[in-house]
Image (cartoon, rainbow, N blue to C red; front, side, top):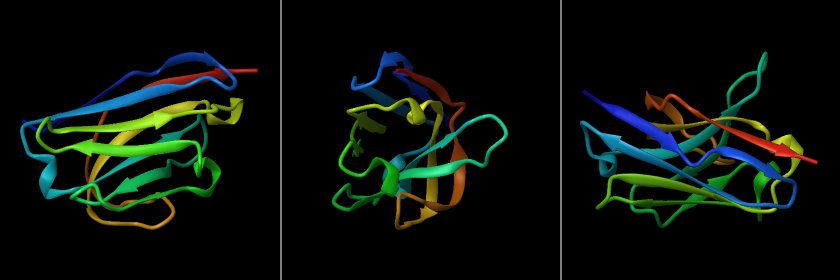
Length: 124
């Protein structure tokens, strides 16, 4: 059974940092591009970061450039998102995803697996 499980979300004040993790089981992430998406109630799910299979190339949404960094450890079957200088507008449910197409602007395409999400809340 394939699973992606996010962790590391929580509540933080503006300017703070959080590190999200996404642990995969049932398959190896080294076969997929991996991405982070976020969604707020009533809105579409938007790509935040996309990282290639080796981890040597990544793209970010314009709204998070210079603040968020994605990384992966294929040996640990885990994806990470380091979020610094958080803003209230970063408040959302964050999802990790395994995809078959790399995307620019943080938007991995052709997602094959989704995690269940972890909530990030940034207060001003």
